[in-house]
Length: 408
Image (cartoon, rainbow, N blue to C red; front, top):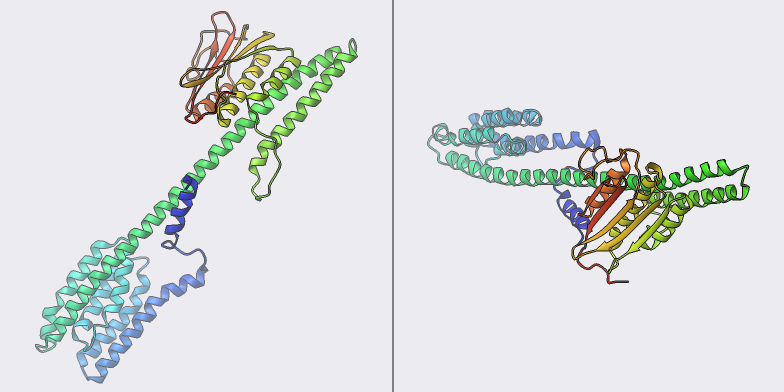
């Protein structure tokens, strides 16, 4: 099971313990009044029993317990005082009303509500107070032990209710924690995807627009003197813009949310470096490629290496006076390595610098940062900076993962 499927499985597992989705005001009102109606109904039964046996004290206590049912309406806003007041009003009825301890029913609802809202101190204080009623029941019942038994039975039952309510509260807290965790993971995944798409768009457009700008300048310069070469520049602009449009459509296709299948061009890999070099040559940059790779890297690594080389060549065209560049692909026991070197000079030469440092030799811009992020996402690193000879060098190292392809 994948991590994402596991995440949804765990979320669905706990969904039943969370709050419902539907409802509205009418449903919430019904849930609010349901405990009151149930508690009142049971107290009316107790009142009927007290009237039947003609127990004046029991009739009074049952009537008070019935009135306590309406106190439950305040349980959402003040769970602690509610459970204390209901316990105070219902405890006498538990002790003196003959028959089963029906007066404990309102107290059950009050205890559950208080536990679910974290009012544990109020709950235990109330149960302790109710437990003191056996002595009162003994005297009130004229020495009849059944009053003591009813109170003790009610207290034991309420302790079990507290345990069950605490278990429900713990499950609800786990559900809420998992909901927050799932939401945070989805937000993180969405932000990472937006960043990846933005990086892809930058790499595609920066390279293509640089080529278009160069060819437009050449075509404009040669428009009158050499129409044939100017036409060639326009054809290159057309081809470059068309390829860029296809790449942009491929990237934006990832944003489709309607679930419809869409045919997209495959992501670029190292087999397209030849096309990239031809495009650079059309822009006036002579690129030599030396491929020393002994194994075919996995697709994510190939995409990262391709984009890093693409962005590096774009930077040569934009920021360097050099008309030559060298691209070297190699590997050792642990890493794939891509090196792009141009003899310069750059606009602002300086010492070789790591991308994590602010130096004069590192031209500003998002391109270098994007290259470094690409490398780090795969567990690699990138160093870019000026060379002592006045040129500029980019070196990217990406780790060799277990199960990489064989030499091709």
